[in-house]
Amino acid sequence: MGIIIVRLSFVRYFALQCVAKRGDVIATESPYFLGIIELIETLGMKVLEVYTCTDDGVCVVDLAGAINQYDITACFFQRRSITHYVQ
Image (cartoon, rainbow, N blue to C red; front, side, top):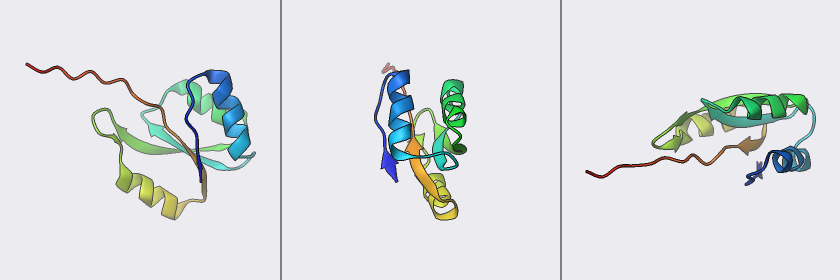
């Protein structure tokens, strides 16, 4: 399974092509940014959504289950900006 850490759209495109090919399964967060889904599908890859909480991030139990059930080539998650207020 590949690990991708990127910030720019065109870099995401090339990074996905480096670790996966047409028909491969890419795990991504859900809810997701629509541009990510379009990018993966444009490359002919399949999207597998994994539940992601805005407070806790990706659900590792769901991710582990997906990895066991599907032949996932790479995981594609974005870092989320979360602001916590202390009162």
